[in-house]
Length: 133
Length: 322
Image (tube, rainbow over all chains, first blue to last red; front, side, top):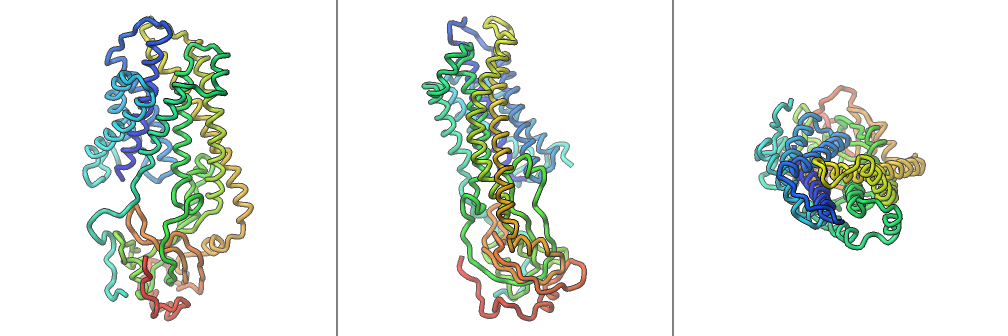
């Protein structure tokens, strides 16, 4: 499997985490609302929810338009969604500009996706995802 | 002209020359910039709607919807702006002529893709030709990969263009534009309604989760509406293109092909940018002259015997410059 698929999956998941979690910050600290101190766990959970939804929707589309096997693609989506969501949720929350958060988290998500693919699939890009048959 | 049989599979070390994959890196800043603008200034028409509705989530939700719609618009643009001869022209190669035996044909049409993702439709089909030995150089020159059949004979894949797919691409482009605008508005309204219904209170334990749900709803509703626009527009474009190109001679000739057919083929000779094999992208002419009358796989010797001469004037036909 080409590692570009992981890069793009990470880019999309990261981008969505960036823009949506950053919006949570701007909304929760505006309009006269009391200052809200979000914990890392809360932000990781928010990021995880967003990233998993984005990654699984991306995986579903990839399986629709390509001949790639379904199970490994969804496993990659799971791994990339967990990593990008947990790591980037906190970061996105602390970038107060949603556009900037989108760009930063999309690039970092692409890098994380590529990293996940290299760990799971090796340098040669061979599909050795756990459970893939 | 090659005299030794081509080795199957990988041909040379190094990376396949491929255009820089710039799409994600250009799309992200553009979308980010657009979101910043929306965040800062709003959208003139939408400002009135936001002000009139008086919803608590305001522009945050609108931006979430814009993100969802923009993601679908980017997805559609990624596919329709590929160099596939519809909106952008195909990579320019040499116009070549060769002959051989059809080893197999594959119909690339997928009903699921036609209906659910018309902007992602690819070529109508592809057929692999076991080429005569005099045309081996078309398979090997500058290639990184050589396709062979089960008998080890070198093959040249020939792609057949689908005008229906082109209609789907253009229709999707129009549809997603309309759908994205409607999607942002509907996403905002849906999220605002849900935010009020579930009562996101600033002191509640699940406050952040409550907010993120509202934003996800805005993004998903906007994305779904934009996607629906792309699908509806694509279906309309497919229908128009199918009616206008019902008598495409290349598609008709390709549909009539079966394994063992002796053919002379002309088309645009390029190197595929993912696997690195040489191929015909797209086929411009198929001339079927007979059938070898035996099941595949076929050998180069069979191709040489079956086609002692063809109308390509092969002996005076050196590899044209790329």
